[in-house]
Amino acid sequence: MMALLRHPAAPGPSNKGLSLVITLSTVPPMDSKTTTFIDAQAQRTMTLRSRARDTFRIADKSERWAFHFVTLTYAPENLPEFRNSSPSADVRDSIEAFRRYIRRTLKLSPSKILSYMWVLESHKNGNPHVHIIFRYPRHLPFPRFDDAGFWPWGYTNTQTCRHAGAAVMYAVKYATKVTRSGSWGAYVRTYGFGGFGETLSRVRWWRLPVFVRESFSSSDRPVRAPGGGWVSRRTGEWLPPPEGLSVYPTSHGVMMVFRGY
Image 1: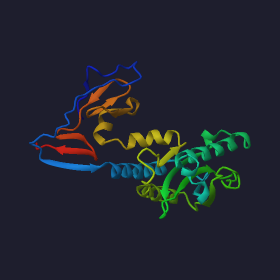
Image 2: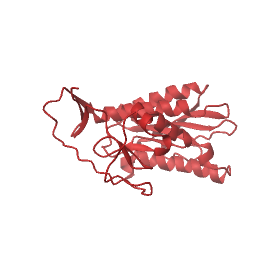
Image 3: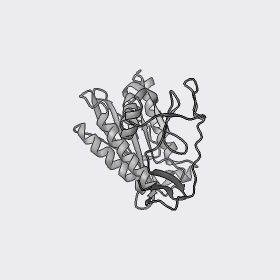
């Protein structure tokens, strides 16, 4: 187990925000043994794939749940650029319409029965479409988004998963598709999660590096510290990065430098 340190700028238990500042030189050392450049976009895609896989593996997949795969397609005259909108805003409005239907028509709480993951993808002609995986109670009828008015911008296709295990496969497949969704600018959101509740907390903890889980408890809620290492949101204790590893930001992503021991 690595030693936890207390940084002078680290927050105390009563502080909500993190004001920790750790200085990190942006000039790579000349005596480094190995230098590896990591592509930021590829790293985001890999992170999404692993998060999707872990979320759907850990999530409750008992018989009470059904998994529905919905594809939202735009009609040519309703593309986002013609309406001063964005695909992510349209997805948000569509899911919010579904949530209103659950609240007002079914008289149920959406936060208790609805979970989902969505991914934005582009056709070969560059037009966007959206894949969504919904987890929804099996005994409730699942509405068609275009017929119900949840997606007024085009057409939808809905399929129900035959077995819960396929949800993991489709989640990873859809997460991979996001790599081809780069034509709407750097600030357009290309995926999102909703619901799952406690599952996401378990996923965040399970996906932390082993040395971090060995040094903190789940109640510490560790996060990456500015400049390197990890810091507890609860106590402010700081865990330095492993010996021999330095991370430097670059214009294309980050550069990891492994020093000789």
